Image 1: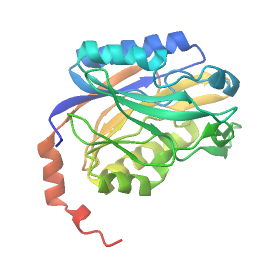
Image 2 (image 1 turned 30 degrees about the vertical axis):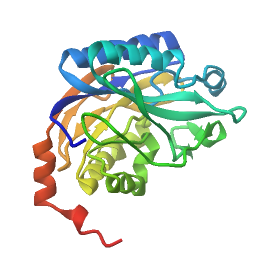
Image 3 (image 1 turned 120 degrees about the vertical axis):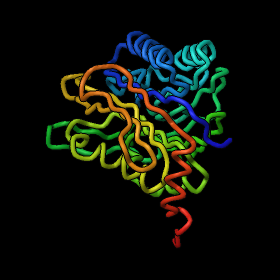
Image 4 (image 1 turned 90 degrees about the vertical axis):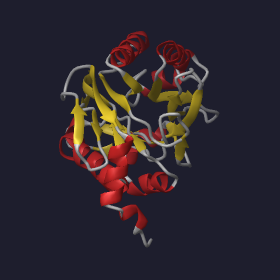
Length: 271
């Protein structure tokens, strides 16, 4: 369906290894966004668990598991769409999970699920080492979610650095690009906003970017700054660098059409 006019909410969390606390916080913040009038609420990457790989793998769930079931019930009760930023999805490969984002409609149905394609493997100067590919199975396809609100492209965190995925989603008709993330403080302070705004401008689409923020463990600090960006690259709403909360901004069909009319670059592609 064509994009409609509504409010969108980007949630910011500081998830830990406490699954019960994480889920309670996620439900509370989705409720808070719904109270503010949001019809699409996005949770960040790994909203349900951020801790040791062994614990994540042991606690992995299916899409029918308790975490998404709780969000589905809330979506149905509040009449909102919920982007379940990402969970550790149980897979057949031993010792691994998928990093999976799911879109839940306002009737509680899961309308799309996307497995993160680009996995984060790096050692950074602050001493932290990330090797996502050692314990995560990569996805292999772009996912455009059908929605009564509009056409929604699903991505996760490190995907943000690979514009070809977003161009593929744009070619499929995406009007909103979702980027639930847990950007490190080291990279986020220089790259997070500029990449989000670039993806919005390149594809003339809204960007919904929920985020993890603050200290999760002794060696894990994330950048925060959850935000919503319009198709011109303007930041419409932003959470601070630390703390949990939600920011809300309007998505307007006429704004999308105006930007695409005044700068019809999507029609001028040659490659």
